[in-house]
Length: 297
Ligand SMILES: *[C@@H]1O[C@H](CO)[C@@H](O)[C@H](O)[C@H]1NC(C)=O
Ligand SMILES: *[C@@H]1O[C@H](CO)[C@@H](O)[C@H](O)[C@H]1NC(C)=O
Ligand SMILES: *[C@@H]1O[C@H](CO)[C@@H](O)[C@H](O)[C@H]1NC(C)=O
Ligand SMILES: *[C@@H]1O[C@H](CO)[C@@H](O)[C@H](O)[C@H]1NC(C)=O
Image (cartoon, rainbow, N blue to C red; front, top):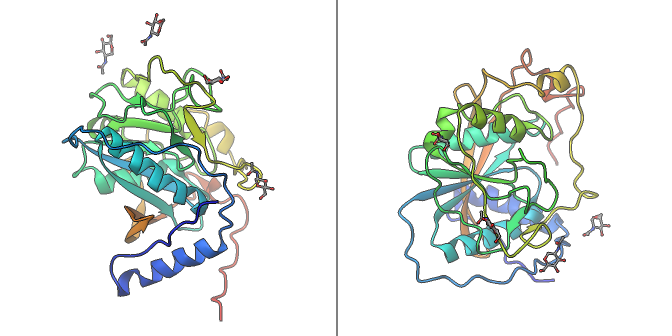
């Protein structure tokens, strides 16, 4: 197993707490993931693109996956000359995970300073350098994790995993639905938004790789249980197109912004507290709310 250098904060007082947390997580984290046999990508002579990509990574409790993701993706994108910054969208409220609302919130943070975004799973690492992360034209979102390449999902309307979309297009469809708490289906709803907007989603063409070697799926389902729970009328509602919620009404606060490094690669961690409209989506909590943990003495 490779050893990993410790994450460090840039500033002293303000980031000390974050650094301590990260060191603690690192100490707790078994880091038993198999080493990625992905190779290194040497930087090409390609000058850095003038298009700016914000990589939006919805996140919670996946530190061992993150320590692989940040160095790998940065190396991969530098090789292509992609001018990028990684934003880890860390959900810190008590509600169930909401990937789509995290992406909406992260998008609002970056929309003025970036040209396009990647909605990016933390556990899906591109291996084939032919997978382009260049800026897609308006009206043509680019689905990197295409069904014919993704290790697990092969249905034709799948747009999850990794999707590149211009800032203008994401705004045009009012981002993603805020109704999806728990695992799954938010990306399928986003597919319908793009279809209704008559976007022409494009995908990688003929690659020399296939479903088994285009990506490394750094995910252990026995260790990380997915939250499939459905309560109240979640099942019926989340099967329907949502014409109301999205970018315009996502309720959140960025409670902290940290500039961190993994293996000396910088990235930004945003601690995001989502708010839940309990009338509209009571399934943001399927059980009785747990008592607040007592502070450790
Ligand atoms: C998608 O492609 C169709 C057919 O080529 C074209 O008519 C349409 O304008 C395209 N949509 C966008 C948003 O570019
Ligand atoms: C892929 O390769 C096949 C056979 O060589 C060719 O017919 C097809 O047009 C190619 N598709 C793309 C998207 O390049
Ligand atoms: C994918 O490609 C590799 C390398 O060419 C090959 O060994 C493997 O059998 C292929 N797997 C599938 C599922 O086609
Ligand atoms: C997945 O995690 C379980 C429990 O921690 C472990 O026993 C198993 O070996 C892991 N599998 C892989 C492929 O790493």
